[in-house]
Length: 267
Image (tube, rainbow, N blue to C red; front, side):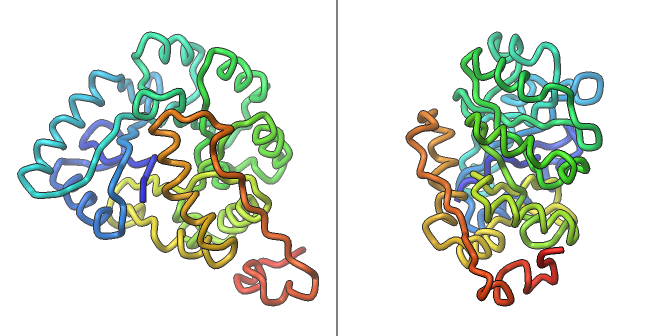
């Protein structure tokens, strides 16, 4: 599997605090079946002032340590990019790294306030030749009142990345509900760990992958954890990706459905 969102680099954001934790996270990730990890620390002006040089230096240090430890994990460059007026120019100059230097990058909107004109901002980014991937929309506090925005963004061609822990219930019932709703309605393209540590935010992808396989079939589970992530790091055009699966549940099936088993049926 390929994990496109992981705060593995030590000491540069709220992820791994030191290189020892980075190594243990990598061991856990590799044991879970992840063979490629994108190192995606926050880039948030005034809070986490990371840039390509800092991130690539961190990756080089970690790769050297992995070689000493015998960890066969491939690392690729990336960042968890927050909204910024200089975002496009930062991508063009290389200050902000995209995922493995592709057209794709992780795009994190504000958690508690819906950004005004996000569709226009996304359109402008796409027009500049880049493809933002919206990170963990299911965890946004404003998704209830702006779910239609997610639908519009997907219609525009914007990929959505769901956090694995959201699917397994790690962030609570509400977040799990929205994660499963988006996956079931064909609005989610990728699963990633968004791992920060080994306890509250571990690098585990397989449990969520298995739940997606149970609901949408093995093929879609593979697409969300391997096929589409591979296409992203290969810079493949979005129209070459496998189509999204949609789960259509008849009313007679509803009591056996995924939401029903969680106690989260229609209200």
